[in-house]
Amino acid sequence: MSRVDQIKAEDWPDEMKEMLHPERMTDLEQGLMRYWAHRPDLVQGLAAFSGSLKVNRKLPEKLVELVRLRIAFFNQCRSCMAIRYTDALNDGLTEDLVCSLERPEEADNLTDAEKIAIKFGELMAADHLSVDDAIYSELREHYSQEEIVELGMTAAFFVGFGRLAATFHMVEELPTAFQGTEAVSPWNNEAVVVR
Image 1 (cartoon, helix red, strand yellow):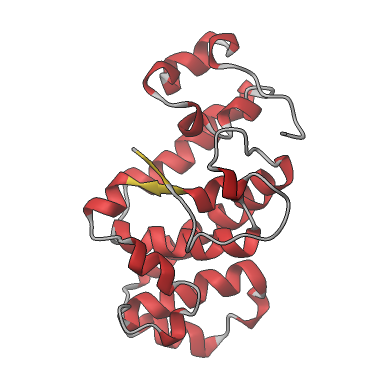
Image 2: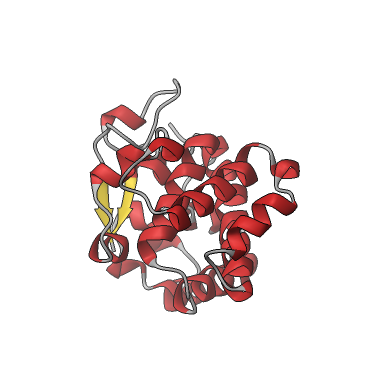
């Protein structure tokens, strides 16, 4: 059960409905918006930022999804771990790749570029001060400066809002494996595909 009351989409302020079109979204896709509706004055800027990260993305969808899921594991954000986005699946994400996130440094189905981006995301979630010159040097072997900045902004978004979502414990629409309070992972568990 969620620790913060949800506001159903039909009760959202009109400006939120017009901006987000909840009638086109499943309950799971509405996600945090059902909680953010307590502060609709803040939603527009946040939706603009998260939308900009998506619309203006230069990094591959599959890569962003792998980083997102690795961060979600460290955040223990259940909704984040349970979701697979269609864009990433269309870009080549498979459950075998998701399973490789258990030990990404050992995975033979991840490229060196994917491994360092995943490691960066993991460190951002677990030990951000260990992201040092060596990590950035390795990132520069595979990514442009623009892509590194995008990766950082995306990871920061995932870390911060994933942790917030984890504290809300919003699990009602998730598969059973994600509804408890014990530690779970995005690998070897049932996932839900959303747009």
